Length: 157
Image 1: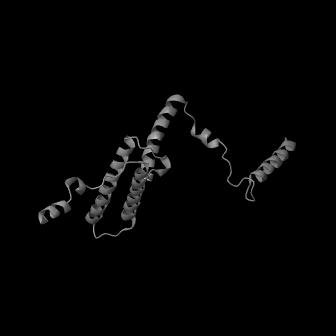
Image 2: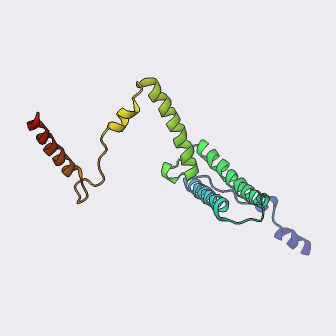
Image 3: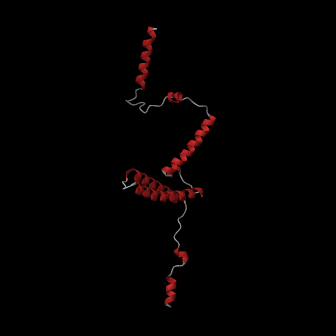
């Protein structure tokens, strides 16, 4: 009888399996947050951490990079599977990749469609002043000075 009780207490192979993470938009958001964390950890490690030699620094960077790459691979696979996500939830490193691709596409389209514009013409466009309608706004005083200067030049001619 004791053998029956012991066999009943043993877990079956299906019960021993680890729980599978649910693949949904919340899990993807968490993955994106973890990837961003590993990006920040890697940046801190490369900038501020002190190591005895470069081999130790490279080994530590490799460990963090491997973990980050594994998370990035899982996040990209979830996105390819059709799990929705917001662009604002992407890690900064993913945003840079997507903006770089979109900038490349936009520049190729712009060069194909638009005529080249001289650099001086681009610089000559007036930019709105951040000081407009404040005490530091000098545009009004400058226009008044130009008007007075023009009046002073006209009578002499």
